[in-house]
Image (cartoon, rainbow, N blue to C red; front, side, top):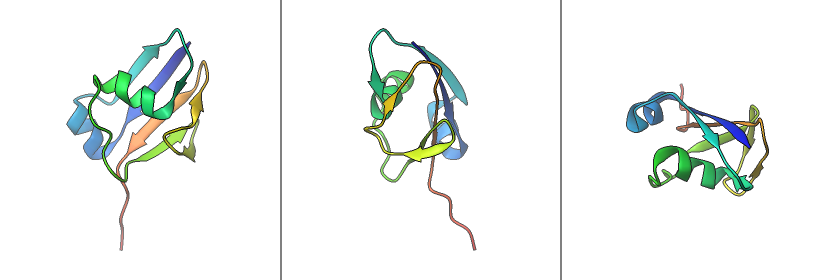
Length: 77
């Protein structure tokens, strides 16, 4: 199973890259994708997560070919 992972804004700077590709042999949820893609870094509080451009929570299952994105909360004014 291949999963494309993207990191945006300050998370990209924190992780040190903007994307990763995971090859998993078993089903994963979004939180497990974060753990594998970041070397088990702690998932920041309030981080936004998306699977295939739709907001999801950390327990959402991921399928082969999915894109999972992580980005910090956005504020504006």
